[in-house]
Length: 446
Ligand SMILES: [Zn+2]
Image (cartoon, rainbow, N blue to C red; front, side, top):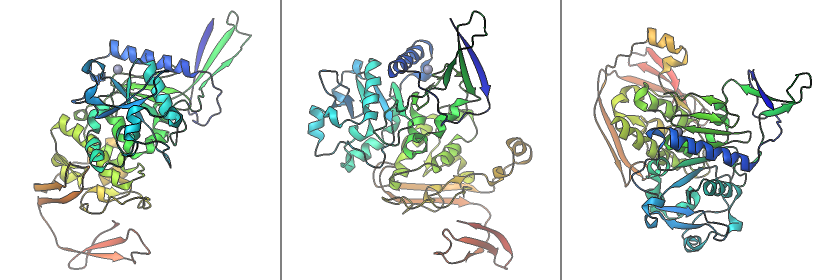
């Protein structure tokens, strides 16, 4: 007989040296139960939704047949279930599909070349009774620019159509696996003084363990935001425990359940005031290996919100709230120039996308609590959006931006802007804005 005693503690570090207690087999059994429960007892919100199957998938193989690439359209409709993998590429990905190995991988992906994270995700997929999995590095030919552009534009369908998104949260590269450290927050103590209770399980429970998923290596990556937003079910494989999240439930491996709530990132954006601005702030804090990926990463999110709200995205801003969206401010230092490419080139300065740094909206929110804002701040717009135009070379967000402009109507005043200090000494420069009569209006930094 085992009695479980739960102790609530204020905070537990994710680095606490807990001893492993659950095997990979136990963990996969847990994932199976969660998925079955979601399928059987949850509503339509949790079901995969997609207009089309991904162009290419991995047939996960069996003990006799190694994995291989297959075309989605060749899979019979009744077999089109697939999982997806969210992972960090790391400094160098040992395996990816190129034009030169596409034919080879279509016959078989050499098992000895498959990194641990991919292998674990394929194992979970097989154990769930699902045959196919989508992994970006293998299912998109990485040196085929046209295919990359076409597939990057389909992220909404790829992730929202997945039966389960497997998030390898704590692996900085593809070698770490989904069950890398396999620690547990549970420890067993023998308390002989408790009469009739030979074994007592003591569970140390921090207040809200959901925050752990936001502290992982994976959640700092730019591409992962849309994977988190667009998937209807996510299994977060963290080093200390698994977390299950779907549109109707949130449960940890230790059995702690949380109510889903509308502020959840997958909630209906009509439920709260400015979800797109929240996502922008979240997005601007993330890291990108390729700076040019910032725009394509927004494509799935923008398409998702456009389909739900009917609003129109204008390079990261929104038609209905454009006047307030223009009030973004830079909050952090300019990000160090990424190794490959810089996305700010050619972007209009009125879009926060031109600013390679952390940003925020609504400057008054920096010093006021939400209740104070509700009580004291009434926003009156004296400006109107008259016209706008955004032209892309090809598919929106994933091809080059050819031109963009907005036309506003409202009161205006002529000012002078004086840059303070030399650019090379102060980057970005601070500046002072003055009326033409020399009276100072404000100071700041671009
Ligand atoms: Zn569910």
